[in-house]
Image (tube, rainbow, N blue to C red):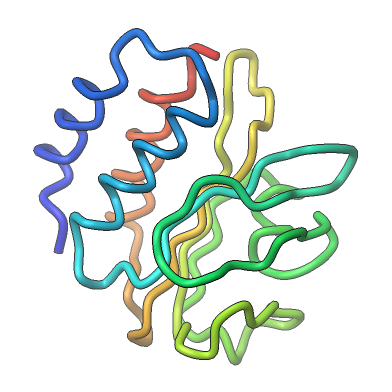
Length: 150
């Protein structure tokens, strides 16, 4: 399990002063992915058009390239702007299986200044029920720190 306080401080130090969204996403994805062995795939999907996400920086195997807001867990997080915690991806209606090893996931909206939706952070685990509210709270704070000023 992650030590979110240490991880948050490390990400804050690495990202200080950076304003490029892709550079921030690459750094955050790398730091998160290597911080916790529950994290099997860690990455961002960027808003690239109306109701459309496209893969951004990530760590792990290949991800889906394009996800409409109307589909899957990532689409639900983008559409509702709320954290999605999915204990069992097989039980999520409309789940998009980008990787056969994924058993559970957490997806968080990435918001910039004035609530602008930048994209979503998707973390998949090869373990069932890998994520909880403590993860959602800590990861939301990390994302607000890194992207909230953009």
